[in-house]
Length: 348
Image (tube, rainbow, N blue to C red; front, side, top):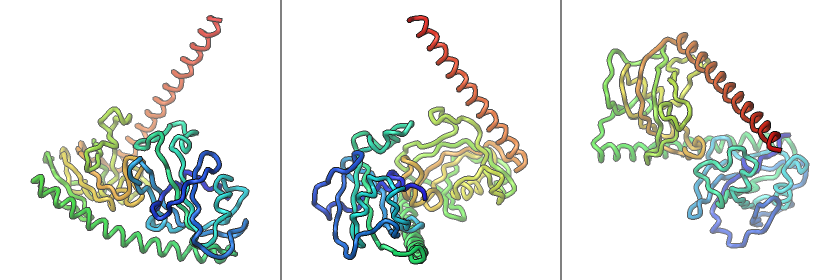
C-alpha cells in the first residue's frame, strides 16, 4: 500500500459555499469539514471514493491545477488505511461520511519545506495550496471498490473528451482571432497545429523516416518563455533530435503538436508553431509554467534532417557528454569542499 501524498491532493473548490472558519490541524494544515452527507463515517479497512481538485491561491484568485472529475483518470478509490496514510490526513478523513467534503489548506512554505528545489515558480512563499476532498462513496468490499473504479474512470473519460472538444473549439477561435488581429498567415497541420513560416527553408519537407535537428524556444501566448535549447538560462544548450518516425522506442519523442507542425517544414526553415493544448499537455499541464489547457507557441528552426540510426547514435553521444560533465561538476564540488575543510582545520 503506497502512502497517499498530501502534496498530490493539493486543491480547492468553491470556498464561498462554506463560510465557516478554518480549524488548525496537524503539521501546519488548516481545514474545514463540510458535513452535508449521511450514513456512517468511514472505517479503517473500508474503501473510499474521493473526488479531488487541485488549486493554488495566489492571494487573489484560485488557479486550477487538476481535477479528478475531468483528468481522464477518475476519482481516487482506495482502501482507507489509517496506518499507512499520513496521520494529519487520516485523522480528518475518518470523520467523513458519504457526501461530506473536506477543504485543506497549507502554506507553500510548509508544503515544500523538505523539497531540495524549494518552492517552484510561479508559487510564492506565504500563499496557500488548498485541497478539497469529497467523499463520493464508501465501499465495504474490494470487489465493490473495483466496480466503482471502472465506473468512475468511464465517467471521467467521457467528461474529459467533452471538455477537450469544448476547449479545442475555444482555443481555435482564440487563435483565429489572434492571427486576424496581427495579420499573421498560417498553415494548419493535419492534427490542428498552426504554422507561421518566418523563414523558408529548402528542399522537401520532413517525412516519417527521419529525425529533425531543431533549435527552439517555447513560450505561452503571453510571451513567457518556459523552455529553450538556445537560451543558457534553461541549462541545456545543445541540438534537439525530434523523432518524426513511427518508432517511439528510438527516443526523441515530443508532443503531437510538434510532430504535426514539423511535417510542414523543410531544412533551414524557421517558424512559429501555435499549438492548441490538446496537442500539447492538455488539462494536466506540465509543471508550474504550463498550466492546464495552455496554448503553446514555439519559435523553431530546422537545422537538419537525419536518419533514425544517425539520430540514435548522436543522442547517445550527447547523453554520454552530459553524464561526463555532471561527473566533472561533482568532482569539482567534492574538491572544493575538501579544500574548504582543510582551510577550516588550519584556521583552528
